[in-house]
Amino acid sequence: MEKTAERFAPMFMHMYATLGALSKAFYERYGEEALPIIARVAANSGVGIARIIQKMGPVRDMKDLGEILKMWETMGFASELIELTNNTIHFKVPKCPLGLEGTTRELCEAMMSSDSKMVSTLLEQEVEAKILKSIAAGDKYCEVKYSTK
Image (cartoon, rainbow, N blue to C red; front, side, top):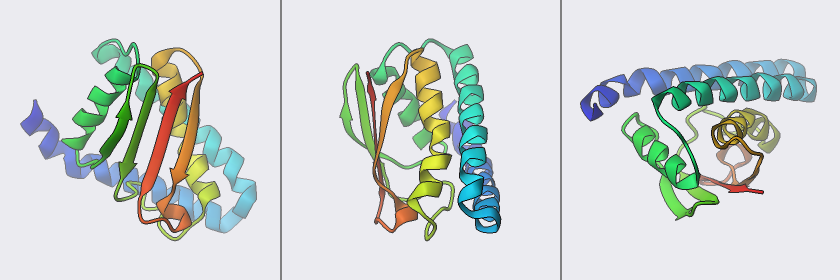
């Protein structure tokens, strides 16, 4: 399974980059007016991704999400786990898979609606999402923390 995931990594990363490029172009064209639309589309995408993941097996807590994060690493999504408990997952990524470097924190937050909604859907409860660092906003890496409320 891991070898198959590795072979699909370039396609996986290309899809993320394409989604980011499209959102970036939409934001550049329409400015702040585009952000709610981008966030809504991203959130809907997050629900869809969660539904696919749920078919692969149950996700009961943040530790299960940590296992998914490990699986994504084989797909080319490098990350560093900082904290993992039943209620919290906190990680860093060295590169924005969406290619949002040099844009804005607001665009990053709109796009991250996907991950926030994915996590909430998987856990079947609202989560608090904190984007502590953002490459889009000029930070050297992204740092994100999700906690159950």
